[in-house]
Length: 204
Image 1 (tube, rainbow, N blue to C red):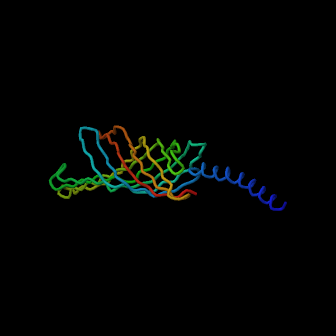
Image 2 (cartoon, helix red, strand yellow):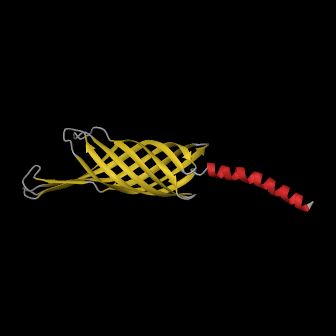
């Protein structure tokens, strides 16, 4: 009798454990996360200047996701830097030097995804981005010598899409493409940005 009761209890506990485990697996893309990212960065000027430069973007991202069935809703924030820098000389005067460098890039937005399989999330994203561009100009041959630095903070919008892959229950990797547009500026430039990044993160 005791053996039969023990087997019945074991079966009952297993019946409750399986749904609980399944629910845990269903919620595997929910919760807070933090990640480090790095990737390809390209800034284009769509104006008559028609300039473009490539570099490397790097930084970090934090966010929070909610999962309902196979659908995932999330918010995220990101801070990145860039190696993009453009140098030229003899712009206005003989011997002068001009450098334009991409500075920090701030982003906040949301994403919507669906669970393709227990370890893969496919998503699209949209939000606000604010990128800084730093201009340095030196003209030592003029009288008096001229030197200045200007920081321009350009606000715009970003769209992107990517895939997130679970490496363990907490650790994940991702690959993502995103496009940013900052609109036509008062100085005549019309910048846009293309990026392909990879990330490695932890979900809490």
